[in-house]
Image (cartoon, rainbow, N blue to C red; front, side, top):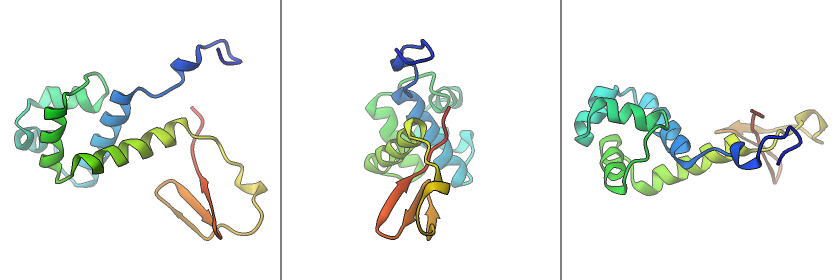
Length: 123
């Protein structure tokens, strides 16, 4: 239980949500439509939409087809899912308390000298 009385497992992002969010972000970044990707992956457009919204848990075969349609390997997708999950479950960092200046911010991470600080938004 958390301090708010909500079971702690409800605060965690489910894998199907992280997979869906990563797939949608990758698809949109590539400028592809649901119709294009679903056709190339040989799945229905509504099913792909449900996967992206985290309502369906696709099989490994379906994921492989979607990855092929997006020009990704399964490992690429899993890396994106890992980043998505870290971002969703991350810790809020007070950058005003950091010593020194932040030298680069990219892909949800800020680097400060040799130290890396993960950035996230509390839900």
